[in-house]
Length: 311
Image 1: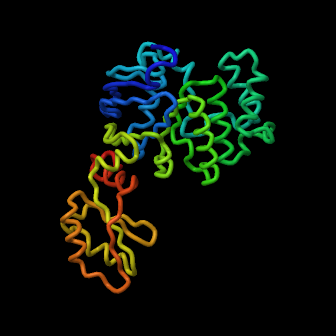
Image 2: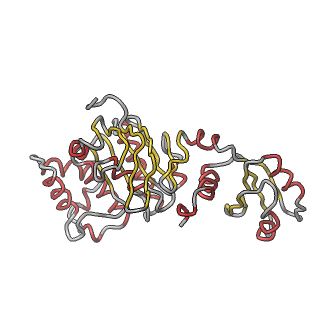
């Protein structure tokens, strides 16, 4: 199945332990060719370990599957040649320039025409004006762009991006996602882990993992619908007092501040509505039913996960 046929990622029942800790539990995941797939979950949920198993850096304790048609256990060297992996932290050399960093990476891949490959990468990622700047002098957004350029040097068919936009400003995040869409349009598959809900909504499909267990997957609309969550928005003065009065009421599972409002959510729609109607709201208060969003759903999933997922 090697080549361009079949899913980019297709794994079943992957498990990984570190000592007594079961970090990834029976991970089953499929990512289509040319798809942007979002991978979400709290810190320590198993996202990074999962990504490292997919790209051949970690061997699963059990399970099976393929990445770009190559077996994730027996053909890890072949996977590494076809995958670009961008780690959470900037991992290039801060005392080298942008051009020197890319040239060094090209040498590690054994590229024969390094000068041309590096020059093309610098132009494609908009790094030309900074090619001779030390990597250590770059802002977070430019370091991110350099790291992506390094991932793309060997023309991978799949990008695995581990929280690539953490710590960068909104414009840099927007520019990064424009580049991801451009790459996906060229047929490159992308699996990206993120904490940002607006980024999750940009993905074609997504999955949510907590305590090593995959709890939800599908399109954003499918994930929201599958949780059967009812949501209300309450606005007005002295919302802290309103929140205190709502806690513990029938049907009220979560109360979350959203700017000048609070979202009140639960799965028992009738009980939740009755609790809100029975609450005597003061002048200027307003409660209305709204559609649950991804953030409402993920807060709910996180609260229902085992305690270790929230630590």
